[in-house]
Image (cartoon, rainbow over all chains, first blue to last red; front, side, top):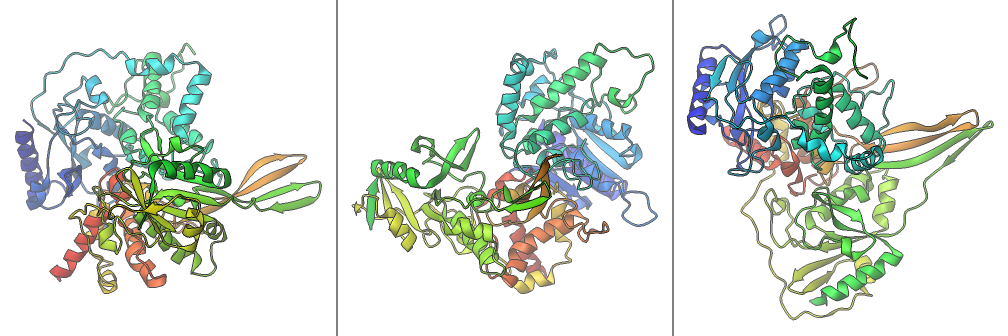
Length: 290
Length: 335
């Protein structure tokens, strides 16, 4: 299955580059140590490097931020093609809505996704994939693969139960313990398609909202601030958690806020490029149970 | 060659804790890190590569370097108290080499870094030889080896139930004076080497290929995070800032902190007026590699990479410093 999908992806990439429809195809390749990593293909003959399998976990939408500027003055920004899973496409929708990416500058090679392995070939699917019902992207220019059959799983937020059962003090203690390992490398932020501020609050010098210490309370402030800035925008792709070198369970924090947004507004981020996220919307008559 | 038993080693380490701050590899969550330990039970004797290098115990990620107290018309300055003598146990040869590199950059080049100098001076390194090279390790390509003792004060090699002991410096000798030693009954076991190798291109090659397209291709993947620089045993950039920790009518307390910084982050090179001479991630990533393999050898002597492989393992998008060296070497073949 993934082999024929791989062939299709390569064929599409080759066509797009040969016909000069796009400047670059962003997909996946296998590195010399065997790990799957993002790949940037500029020449049709290099399309052979592209791979597709259940280790293609990176959310490549983050790289669209590097392609916002024209290559030459006076031109449009380069058009790129991107291999995108259903979760990645939701991140793209967030960026489309926020005016970060123009739809016509991106060619979406959508993937009918079987889910990503947790830890290499044959291992269980990642938690986010076990929960996922959306095996076909909500937006694409070409679709690769057949929609896989998946069990109809109800969103029960079961992963949050343990955290929600804690008292506020226990929860604080839990997060203090997790965050104190943070080395403030910002890998979570850099891997996140939704984090694209020109200057992050965490690094702003004037005013200096946050000290430079790689320590509590700064790291706590940083993570909570980031989670709130992603409220109603995070698509739960877990790119942040996978990038973290010290294993901080950031998905729990993001999921908790996603649940609040779902409960309060009945909203799930990235479902389409039109619906504005609730926290970017003002309704005169809105009455929220806060 | 001398040897000690595991039991004697543990008893010795326990005794050391009374007099010294003992730092050793310890399991913290899913990670193995060099931590200050209060008991030998916390020490991970059987570990591979720690996730962070021990550099944080010489060059802390966050360090108060001055406290300024203002109030009632007076200003007083206080430097932090001097550190206690420390022993770092279980140092791997690559990390000890990393400290040698830092010595060249921070001590042998004037002005010396006083904070680093103090900790380095007051530390004894007890090495633990690697039984093998792990994925990503390429120390043998950088003039070291999994059992290289030369950069330690004393070196241990596990051999069955005992540890073979090599004394390297006077400091190591003094510390090991209280460690019961007997004549070793066996030869020192040889580490299992991997076939992994990388060759560092000559200075001339780096000079010639600064503008090569290879850097943009590599940087396409880079996320501009700081993981590689923070796990690196030789990266040493820092920022200094004064933080007001207390302020009111009675006066204020200002702490001057220095904390790790990274040349890979956006804005690292931004200067007064807002100009940034390294605005693209290609320029930043290239700078990291040039710093390690061209600027450091040129300005300070050693190559600032020890082949520990941490950046290779930690990079979320698999940017691979050994692969990069190969790419640069290939440029030479192509021209």
